[in-house]
Image (cartoon, rainbow, N blue to C red; front, side, top):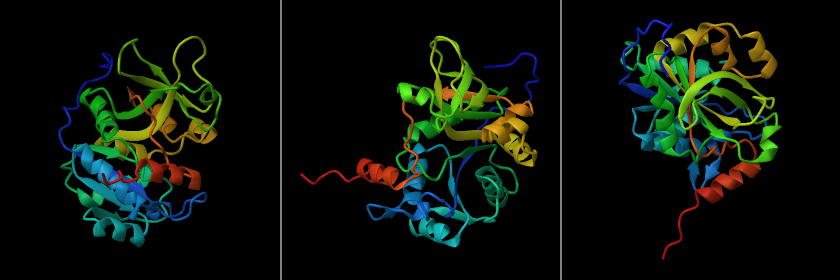
Length: 260
C-alpha cells in the first residue's frame, strides 16, 4: 500500500517492542487486570499471549504497583507508569521511553490489557502492514457477520479502501455509525495498534481532534493530522473483557482441558 505522492523515507522495521497498558480504574469491572482466570490474573494471560506471538520483547505498562507485581511474579517485565495518563497510548509511550531511551526498538505494538484470549497470530498480523514505509500506524479489522453489529454504536466500524481479495487496505475513517453506505462488507474495528516509533511519539504530542472528541475515538486524531493508518483483515474479533459476563466467557474459553 505504497503512496506515490508521499516521500518514502522510512527504512523497513526490524525491532518491534510489544507494550500492554493496564490500569485498575475500570468502572464496569473494578480491578479488571487482576481478575482471576483459573488462578492467574487476566493481565498475565494477556502477557502470555503477547509472548507467544514471538515478534519481540513484551512489557506491561502498569498504572499501579499491584499490576506490576502480578506480572513480575509470573516472570514478565513491567514498568510502573504515571497513573494519571489520559490514554493507553500515553502510558505506552512513557514505558517505551523508559525501557528504550536510546531508540533501539523502531516499532511499538500496543496490545490492550483486557484481551486474555487474543490469538497470538492477531498480534503478528497487526505488525505486518508496517513493512510498507508509507504506513505510520497499523490496526486490525474483521468483516461484520452479525447483522446487529451493523447498527450497534458500541461496535466501531472502519471505513477501509481495500481491493477485493486483499488482506490489507488504507483506513479512511472510523465511526460508530453504519458506514460505508452501499453493497459490500463492513469492518468491525479491533483496537490493536502497531506504530512506527516516530509516529507514536508524534501522536501523543498532538491535541485531541474535533472528530475524535465527537466520536470518542482516539485514532481519528491520527487521521485528522495526516497520518496513514493501514488495516489488516483478520477472521475473528477477540473477546474484550469489560463486564463480569465477559469475564465468565473468558474463563470458559481458557478452561484447562480435562485430564484423560
